[in-house]
Image (cartoon, rainbow, N blue to C red):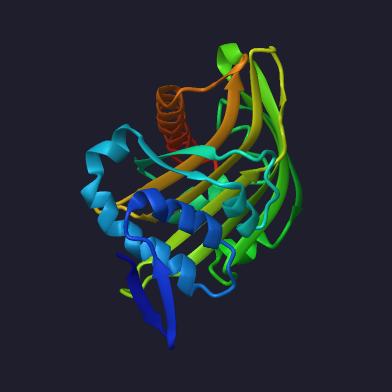
Length: 255
């Protein structure tokens, strides 16, 4: 059953289950009317309590279809669906610092998995960080270390968005999209396309709560990656990145 949100005479049909919600949130991220992504964030909150244990371990969610990717404003690299996983995590840093770090012109000093990062076209970051602008959008080229699998270089797009929920809670969304095949070294793996959608909100005991949905279309040698590999790798990399972000802030990296 769909939850109906009526705002300014507009009815928004947003899914209630997390498996479909994260796809809805990804597709509606850049919709000009904030009612749609706000419905995503609002409906996601009770799902976090319902799936607490699963989300801490990594939870298999709905796959992105080529139609979903197209509706979100991208061109899919293939005709198949892209497998997804969602996870929750916590950061000790407050949301303002988290957004400031993730939107840095160069994140290589922050994250050990980042071999190189080149910011290309972008909107006004300062305007977004001070709360004046709703969006901060940018394009970038990145090389990510994959450990024994080599490294992957991707052309990608990013978008941050601020939202205010009905109860006044300020939250933020972060979307990344690498819709074209990456350049992978090592010959053990191919990466066709990769997408993510994050929700950041104030933590219950301070800091920041983070909800991440990730979709990856990749093959290991001549076979698809198993779900277990996607889940464990995603959760482990997320935990490591959060720890490195907190360390960067604590060390005065933003000063």
